[in-house]
Length: 123
Image 1 (tube, helix red, strand yellow):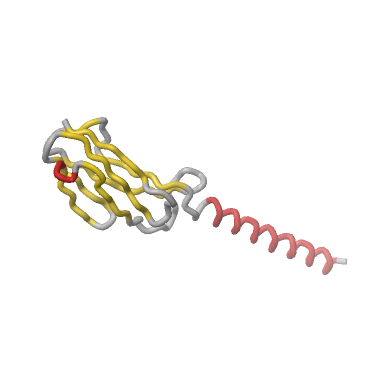
Image 2 (spheres, rainbow, N blue to C red):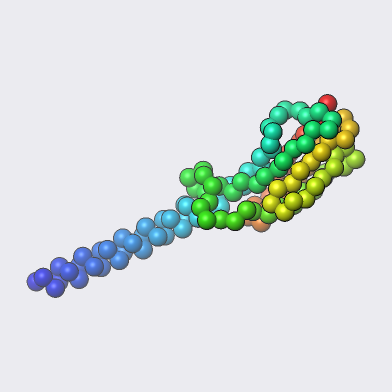
């Protein structure tokens, strides 16, 4: 009788651990959203301002993915290429503004299905 209970408890524990691990993999370690952040974050920027761009990959709970390396992304300048100067520093990018106008950018990440579009106003 005792061996039968022990087998049932062990089986239940194994199933519970597998379910918990599957839950963690699905919601904690998978990318659910890619978000582009500008630092400093403003509605418009002035000439000679510099902006640092970072990509945040968020899990199912809306927080950063634990134990993940910095994600890589590419920037395509759709409009206003002559208005900015782009510095590539692997994980983050720095933009320096040279002239007034509107710059339209698209960001391509490894985990996003569609590009992320942003518009920057330079005064």
